[in-house]
Image (cartoon, rainbow, N blue to C red):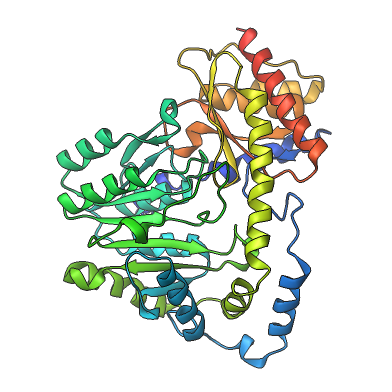
Length: 433
């Protein structure tokens, strides 16, 4: 090309959750049955939207206005409903004007980071959900800036690490929190969130909290909304229906903006996000239109409680099967539907392997594992030996070695087979050193 047209941040666009699919499909062509434990799609794993929710959607599809544009920020009636719902929960009060709809949270994430000045950063957790870390780092044209989540403390944020990095890096202008967390499944205590907002207040930062899983908690844990602890700090909460209903294909998410009126710079920043959204006119109308009818239905709370109870049962089975394995650290999942398994330091080597019965798969994996991260080596061998597709922990923008697996398999017998197989193969792999 006449000029180098590639963005400075192009190398930061990484999404191991999807990239592993291409590798798994190659093994599938060799005769392996693939068990897709890489991506958080409940529908793909067998969950079904209840008929009463489908009936609401079908009835709405018969209304002519369902096929029209919505306002740029989203449908007035839906935003009014969500604002009233949020205000019933206490915390900072919002109006419909503080709610902005997007085509899924991926769209929201792109615009939230995209409207920042390149030299100013949002520090986020490590391990990190790839959409956040890639979008922030790509826009800045620099490596992701992170604070540590501590696997020895239930994957809670290392608040001292966060404070020191904020203090000594004046380019940091915002703090990202994911609660409940992806990929670890941690649910943070109120005290942790209060300390994070206190750091933001002390250093005049804003807080972004991804709360897409906020109503999917269990084992006695409840996620505290950012609105309850934000106090006078500027903030953004990210919410949506993709995981909660679940309806990931709807691509429908929104942000709630807190305390914009308290800071003219933050208010202008939020306006720039709305203006950016205006360039693409609006977000999809149908899912917005059905939100009030679905969430106000008397059956909705029971629907969410039932799903949370299902994940609680699975989280306990998975934890009990893996907790006593020497060489790993595993915490029980309390929110969302993921579990992170971390290998202890120095237990992985570049010579470990699993027995692979399929000769062609064995040949392929021996080629793939050359010069890859040690946890990715395990993930590839696991895939070749069992067909179980998980995501290496190093794919979540961190140096820790391990993998993320979901709790989504809806067939109880198959779910138990997956985690019993993981237990067996982890032990086999570590003993092969």
